[in-house]
Length: 227
Ligand SMILES: Nc1ncnc2c1ncn2[C@@H]1O[C@H](COP(=O)(O)OP(=O)(O)OP(=O)(O)O)[C@@H](O)[C@H]1O
Image 1 (cartoon, protein in one colour):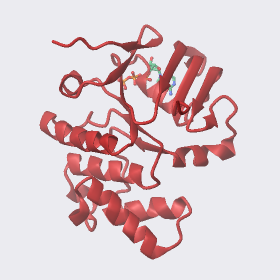
Image 2 (spheres, rainbow, N blue to C red):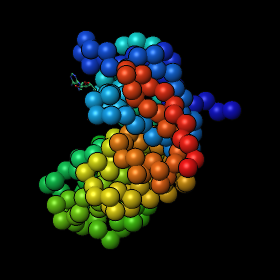
Image 3 (cartoon, protein in one colour):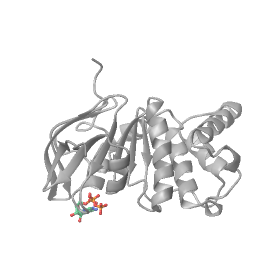
Image 4 (spheres, rainbow, N blue to C red):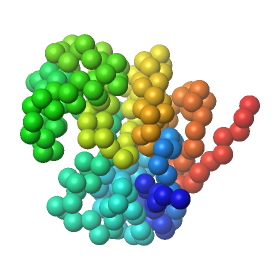
């Protein structure tokens, strides 16, 4: 079997001196769609931040897309993030430029040089999220759901080995949440591995999948009962 894309062993996560999660032992394999659930304040965002190295892993072992989180050097962080696609609740698009320019900005920042290749890549990722005709628009000219699609397209630019989505539907109404979820499901069916933090139980019921839960300072896999 191939190596897991993410593996944490006896890991603990801290915010400053406060212990947020302890004894984490989990694995995510290529092609999986995994939810991370838990009440507000139980540590979902702290967990995600540790994975994209916004928080250091101080205790235990962590391996993600071939990087060792425990021994990660500051200079390695951009290379780790290139192998991850990160999607946030508040989209985080640059408001002063168009969708196309948002995506080109990321490609340039990650070392792409050939303009024709860059334009092709932008078109390809926008097509994946059904936004091919909206590249000329500014973020404020798009609905929340459309902005999140662009953010997902941005996450796909460098063909990431793992997509980390932290409450990607948190700012969206129920119908738009389902539409964005459909996009994530399609991307997963095409081979991308996804870890998605959410507290939207309606989505879990509609799209059941492997689920990790943060509760009382621990993270464990929960088994969904078939109703
Ligand atoms: N920058 C920070 N400094 C200190 N403590 C923090 C920081 N960020 C979060 N915390 C604390 O860490 C704990 C977990 O927060 P976290 O944001 O990871 O939870 P969450 O499950 O993602 O919550 P939510 O669903 O509300 O986003 C909380 O007690 C929070 O107060």
